[in-house]
Image (cartoon, rainbow, N blue to C red; front, side, top):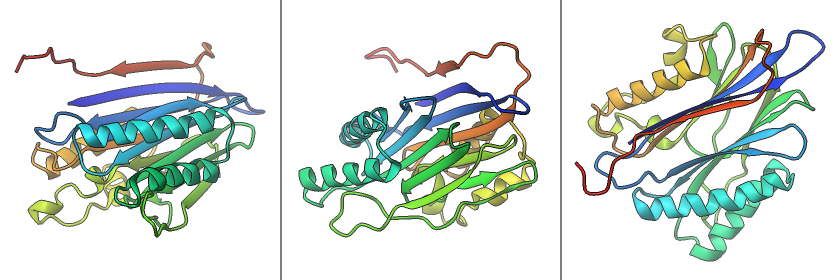
Length: 257
């Protein structure tokens, strides 16, 4: 299964009007009944938006149930206006208390905050995150281990200004480790995006490239659930200042092949 989604929200400023575009690409593990990754876009009080990416341990229906549960709890805190770290800490405490340290999950929380004029990432994830501009892409910094274990690392954080051309890319570990089981070299996502000349490309184009690259590294049969979230800030000359969202997903009837 593959899912694609794009959406945009407008940011007004003293200069050129900007639009933040969110693109999501998702594919389940080959021959698995359900993806263990869940993505949700959540409106915060005021004008801010957050994107949650939760990757439940394993794959299939059990992992999906876990990621849906954690996403729901985290999203409710985001809607209440909780700080990024509070959201992650609460998700960790909940999972630890209910699964006794036996089950883990990774969480990425990307926030678009027009009031502070910044993009933020707070995450417990081992898959590297990438930031780009009109020149190229680079890693956002250190990574952090998953939530749900008795020993948990501090969340990895990154922030940058809302500037035209800025792009953030986060993925689940199915993308980061694509090709590993076949003896391939580790995926250097920042280098791959820069080499492909995607600096300044649309978030949708970037998301499609990353997903296509990951699937190719697994020879079209993803070894794990794959999700790509791209958040891009672009100059906006469109007189229609509304927020839009488009979702595209395949539908298979029960019992069909």
